Image 1 (cartoon, rainbow, N blue to C red):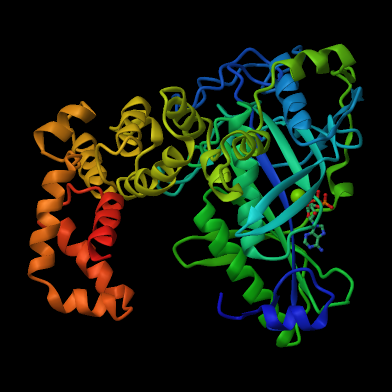
Image 2 (cartoon, rainbow, N blue to C red):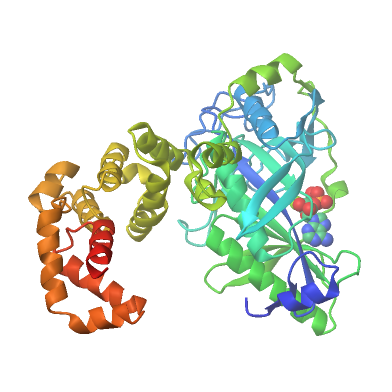
Length: 495
Ligand code: ADP
Ligand code: MG
């Protein structure tokens, strides 16, 4: 966003983010993470995605008379995991409440949620926005059931209702209004997405709606009290999130500049037009007439349950990254890159376990491999070069068998399937570095005999001339000479 003026922000000293046309941006997130349980939050119906409409909603999900909801232990366990991962308090006793509203996809007329006492309280998410560390405080995360879904596409002049999603377990994760730019908001969402998938509580599939974000956005003049927010609902791609928030910020500023007050509202982002549009004016909590659900007892979580869940937690990405820095001497940046997903970290660890130098392996993974995966839109688990193959390649660079440029050729052969075995590819392509100093000396002598000008310039103190000579030797050796050895021999010969 070209309108962002960081200089202005630095001058005023007050706002903690970049100003947009003189306004401070305030963003808070509510994220619905669908919990990866096989059955629903209060029933035994399946949560599998993509079934025929209305085949997976049972009487409990619809709250038919005579049914009673029963809490799914797996959903609670996942909420505990999130709380542990984010340093939150796990409430020893939390309460389910009915949130009453009418909508076609909610025929029972209320959603079971948590209101006054949520299961997860406080905590924070820390991440980097570029090089800048940022911490966003959480207000809470509460358990709730999802509603059904209206289907508009497949009907001419009618809408259908699919209740399969009714009763699917959700964790709604609510932040303080701590974000100050679109970049921070998107970075927060990415970090949260990474954490919920890392700890295995949510599959993170955004197309299928397993991770949907509502962005609350307001703007104000620095020093003013908080502006009125509008809530952009159901952002299910990071790209749309960025576009929607950018648009919303510009729109709100435009309104204020034109002398209109912002009305609190719920809006939807339309990717086709790139605009946000009001759906409805925002309800207040009072409109929902929350009350404790009489069918569900309070949720009690004993300390020993929390400890059992804690014992089962994987190492978290930040702890893992810090360990990589400590154990392998990687930079913070590289360590953060390698801990983007458990699969990527496993690949790196696989290479190290197979004997690779950690720093070299890291360079290949965050460089050449990341570039190719990105280019071919592939996941690390699909990489044609395995971690042991990378380890072997790195070893052959380390022991001087091949140069870096030869290694790139070997890597390409492995990646494209031209070869499987590193040593066989080196052999077949004749990429072995010259280890015979006699042969190398012969090449050097030839190069020196035909490059008097460069020699004279080198003796006159020009470093460039020396590099040119190294280049000539490397070329004459067809890239097989060891550059360090060439350097040393040349220096010796030139005196
Ligand atoms: P509700 O539950 O009615 O949506 P909350 O007060 O719980 O309202 O806030 C919801 C979200 O909106 C939170 O993430 C909060 O941080 C954020 N928020 C609250 N006030 C503002 C504001 N003025 N600007 C931007 N975000 C805000
Ligand atoms: Mg809300």
